[in-house]
Image 1 (cartoon, rainbow, N blue to C red):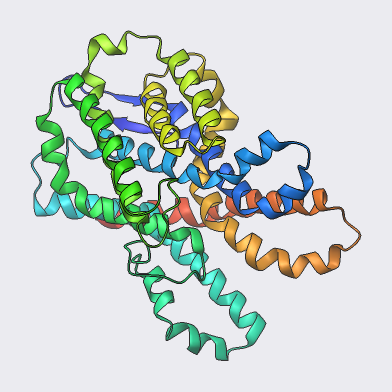
Image 2: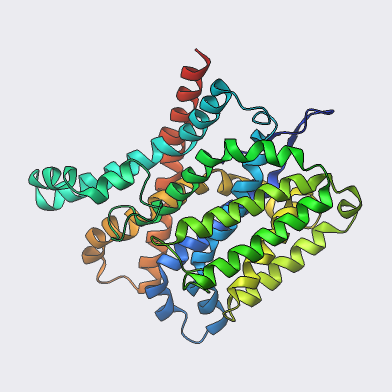
Length: 362
């Protein structure tokens, strides 16, 4: 997500810049990347059990993404959709499509190309008749219909968020009607508790739901983020030292996730997102600096390309690196991920988004 220009309420509305919300996305993306590199990191980090345990639950970065997404989408679009018309709804969905789909489709093309390079042109026919390919191409693979890992595995979360976007125009009028900030924050808490209970009910108490009930996990956290947005009007609550509260929530999130208390980690993420939105120190310095914000800007590209680097590029490169230490190979994989993400951000993600916005304006 680019540095965040957020449209606030129609009453005295003004554009504001909330860099920490952008910056933390980059660290969440890196956490997911490290999780998918954990087989090598487990070896490299022998004797560093605390760090290994953090890496081993990096899939929880997805939960932080989901709460952030609900908050930001509501902050940006809820007022516009408070009285939804066909034109407004289609405009919203087109802008969200512009944000997520071009890069998703291009990276899916990388996987198709890699398959053809390995197996020849005949692989294209097999791909085009593979239901899993079309599930990903149509962003349906995160709706609970798919049961097979293939192609760009992490894309299931993008699909689940797309489902949330489709439902958001129905939710926005209800959000706007809730004007008591304390009630909204209570609803955010109740939503997270309901999501925790739902994950237990479907057999995923550690929030490790993916293709089966991953959509439920994402939807619950997205909705909690939406209620957090409405909680911004709770003036007395905003007077609290949210910078330090958020830092404490982050520390507790890290501690709880390494002690198998993932439910508490998700609660802490909810508090952290609200604290970040207050734009206070020390969170502002930690996550709002230029390096963090840039990392946040390319976070979607990092998230989408890293599986291609790890599952397709590195198996081709590694046989040539037999003399290189494991640490060097991991550093190379991480570096290639950041480089490719930067390239796709500037050559695919941003230009495609801008072009699709122009089509809407015309």
